[in-house]
Length: 216
Image (cartoon, rainbow, N blue to C red; front, side, top):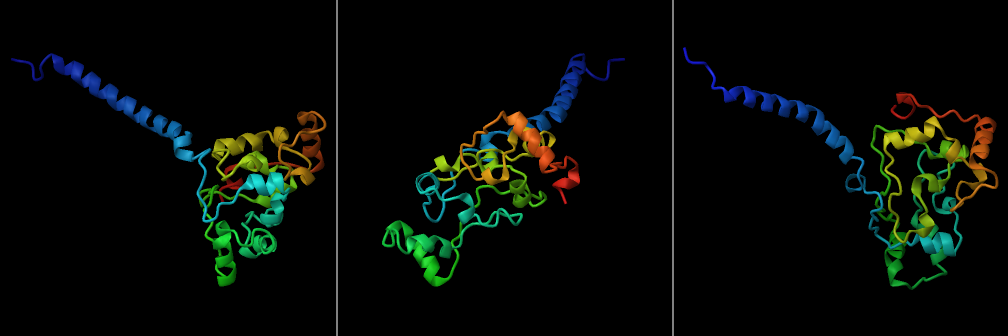
């Protein structure tokens, strides 16, 4: 009696089973790598805004503190963006005829907010509180990078869960005195490890590493 399958069928079956096994493992692995690349997380990609706002000029040249515009960062989960009245507080006297600021003036007189585009946009299932981080000495540049060097703001970090957990598990390398959180290019007067350990004790810093700490 002739065999039901030809001799080469065994080799084909092995190839098919091996391919299925590699796909089950390989596809999730490739997806995990993909979401961590700059092609997916937009790290370093400047976001076009309705008004060309140059942080280099405002922060570095004019010395405007982060909290002047992002005034909610110390007291609420969100940092907030400045309303047009805040912009016009300066620009009613400075560059008041600049064509670049026409959208700002239109927004102010029409009492309609500018539609700024988000640069850092966490998923809805992630809870993040700016105020607790600033009060515990996590500097703005730790997450947002050197915005004083950015003509147009872009993401400096991926903000992936693993990146956040790295800090939560060992916050010491990232801490500074709370009064210095908005300082760009901060350098501690003493070794960072020593400073961080002192701040952990003084401020009773115990970042959550359990799921419910950020997923509520």
